[in-house]
Image 1 (tube, protein in one colour):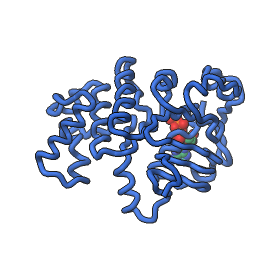
Image 2 (tube, protein in one colour):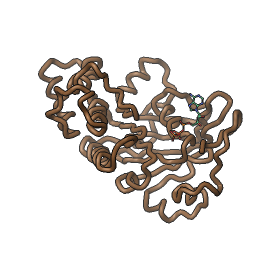
Image 3 (cartoon, helix red, strand yellow):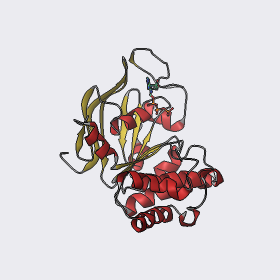
Image 4 (spheres, helix red, strand yellow):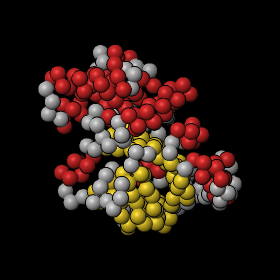
Length: 265
Ligand SMILES: Nc1ncnc2c1ncn2[C@@H]1O[C@H](COP(=O)(O)OP(=O)(O)OP(=O)(O)O)[C@@H](O)[C@H]1O
């Protein structure tokens, strides 16, 4: 069991890909009920952190705890049980194109929940309503705008009522209005359903306006963790370089084949 009420806790974690250390000595906490943004230069290891949370990548050192479980788990069965408690929204949406919107959202329920037809319909419509698409169930994915497709994927990620939501670049490819809508939904759903949410994003300014906490991954570790207003007051040159989008400074962008790898430019 986890020692406190964090939804996610990393203690002294090292994450490696082959012989390359991507993140080292990382301490990170996502308190329950919070929306935490994870930002940082391209290639710094944000998605790698996500894979460690979903149990796709085991830490080579340190402790990763998610929803009260320490990873890696002893069996695939336990890992799948934990994954059912995480809603994951990936960049590509992953909607099945030969299934309607309704059936896409129903899919995890059909596979993992033992519901009768009425219960299933009620649950799917509730999730579609939560994302403002209650009347779109009949549509096929090809008939959706990018923003609608993202919302359907979000409804599907919510289908099993996960206590933890993980978003990897939820705003990619969306216009500013659709971005605002998705960020608003992430915040609202987190609070309404009593979830905890982690949002990996390059849309730094917009996301900082709505999140409770922010972690910056840079130079192989967690370079900052705190609230958005604390971030405003930090004068660490590395943090300022990233926040101001300057190519020159302590952030390194060289690729190294072994040892500690630097972020891609
Ligand atoms: N499957 C893999 N095998 C080997 N190396 C990998 C693998 N996936 C990622 N990497 C390496 O790990 C580094 C961190 O990648 P990651 O995708 O976590 O970065 P990121 O911060 O999410 O980047 P971006 O913002 O561009 O999505 C990359 O530079 C890449 O070289």
